[in-house]
Length: 162
Image 1 (cartoon, helix red, strand yellow):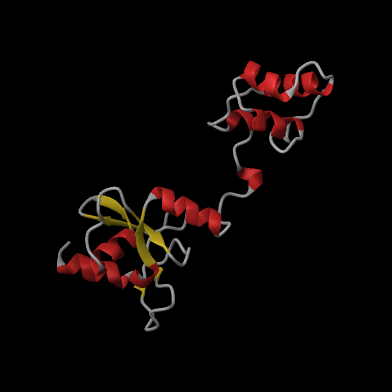
Image 2: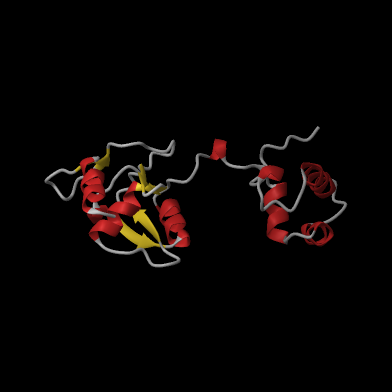
């Protein structure tokens, strides 16, 4: 980035004299709230640019995380390097994950090994004592704890038997 681009970038950041406060991005934003800036024909995330200007290059395999949890913040004191895994762990620790009503359920969850039809079968077979949880697990290619959660309706709660 040249001096003009750097000056233009920082002019879009509401830099407060207080280094503890968030420095909000005043330029274009993505729907997720992250600042979006075009530099040399490329669209970049504003907080990543702020980190690079204040701290230095972002090593391969790392992302820039917000300590403040404010996607529009460009205060370098609120930014740190992390991994996708560490950022996800931080999200869970701070209870910032998607609201349950928006989470992928059942077959729409990419990790699902069962279908709704199979879940209904499992519950009926268990309810009528045809198979125990270990037998069901073996037959359906899942673990016994997974079967236990299904029959107790801890998972697949949205499935109503008919």
